[in-house]
Length: 112
Length: 116
Image 1 (cartoon, rainbow over the protein chains, first blue to last red):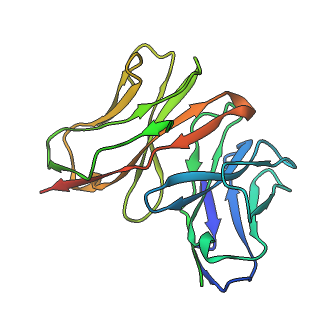
Image 2: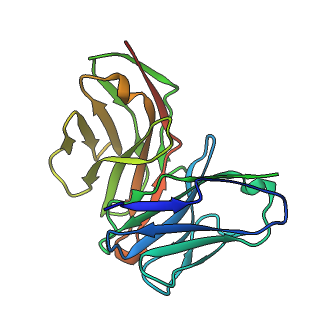
Image 3: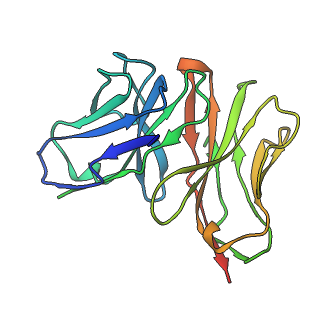
């Protein structure tokens, strides 16, 4: 039982490049979330999903897209990376009751 | 207004002593939940403790307890018998709404350093 896993752990991109961050959970959770963490800002919600095939915008969705084709996976895409997207990205999941969210280990992204 | 406020500067505590980390919140919901997460230097977010707004007793999990004062809208984390491994960033968070409409809002965190 791995919980929530994220790939990659670390990535360096050049401005304008694209990439996809993968989140996987093996807890059969309905809800999944993507956050970004910046110094002094805490965690901010980018996008979330309340079930397979559904996605919704969070607090800071601009510049990101997401997909939830399978219940266990939640993908975060950056179509054209910008230096402002340099951050640590966390994925989380929770059961349908929407209570405790369990987090992955994070992905550190540097956009040059 | 900020939904979650953590205003303490970096906190220091002597090993084996207790420490309280402050958190105040702002919501008009009657049903909400309060969480504390720990983030060590390795970076992962570790769930510590949860308190529901209707829970009459303060939540406890091992050395962690949540001092919930509803009227004052505070949800302070108390760590008893501090250990060196408790040195980390601690985040308070609040869930508003329910089910698919629930949202989790985080505070900016407090850094705790445990001195030997």
